[in-house]
Amino acid sequence: MTDRPLPFSPDAGPLAVVVSDLTVDRGQVRALDAVSLSAPRGEITVLLGPNGSGKSTLLQALLGLVTPTTGSVRLLGTSVHGALRSGRVAAVPQADGIDEHFPVTAAEVVMQGRRHFTGPWRRPSGRDRDAVADALERVGLSGLASRRIGELSGGQRRRVMLARCLAQEADLLLLDEPFNGMDAGSEEVYIDVLRELTAGGRTVLVSTHHLGTVERLADSVALLNGSLVAHGPVAETTTPHVLSTLLGARLPGAADSTPDAAASPVTDRAVS
Ligand SMILES: Nc1ncnc2c1ncn2[C@@H]1O[C@H](COP(=O)(O)OP(=O)(O)OP(=O)(O)O)[C@@H](O)[C@H]1O
Image 1 (cartoon, rainbow, N blue to C red):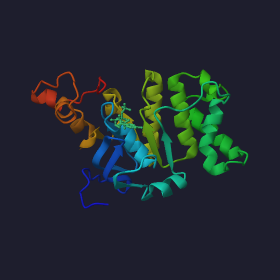
Image 2 (image 1 turned 180 degrees about the vertical axis):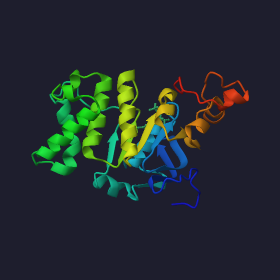
Image 3 (image 1 turned 120 degrees about the vertical axis):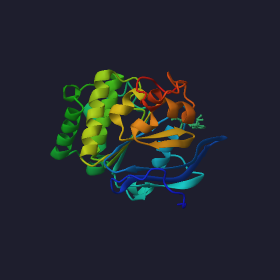
Image 4 (image 1 turned 135 degrees about the vertical axis):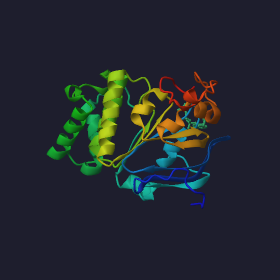
């Protein structure tokens, strides 16, 4: 830990994620440079940045998948290792890693979220099966429970992966670019579920390079570009002015320096 003050001090009580002065080198590339940020419990924090800005690296560091060069991470008030071992952290990587030809149903994928309850060898109980059915219902996929995962659309598969997080009953969800290639209907369901989760006190950290979903999704936005360039409410972090000057992203209206343009959140483009 360092004495460097966190850039965002929420009033919403204890913090689910605390990243302090985190630097991560990947080979010759400094993927993250002295990033400090925090995510309050019961909120959705969006990691927004262009390709290669370090969003996945940050999420991987939170999951102990990359070793920091310097700095530290605390999840749910404990170490990364302790939080992961407790089963209270659920993650969906950018690529779901599902082999399309693997003969596994949507319900069986969601049941993987119950591993912490069933253990690796025990048969699922009625409670586990109920949890899986509830999770699939919440993401609107009850009718596809016995469909082979490889036969689902990309958006449906992402909803299945979210249902797996729900079945896990995790307190903290780490989601890497879940909206990539997702149709509008799936996106709406997905955002509704995340909002329900945070209303119930769960915490979500989600990365995206799409501005279109941010306003509906985020309680706060952390703008990444190797380092943390801004962190705060949507209205203050997604204006053309902030995005163009701090992030260097090419955006419509970014050159327009009128106060109105500078103050308006940009919501219909990807950060490229
Ligand atoms: N396995 C790796 N080995 C070496 N360098 C890597 C590796 N993974 C990522 N990088 C580099 O680290 C930097 C950050 O990449 P990262 O994947 O974290 O960005 P990102 O914001 O998630 O990008 P995207 O939106 O494209 O997923 C980039 O310069 C990238 O080339």
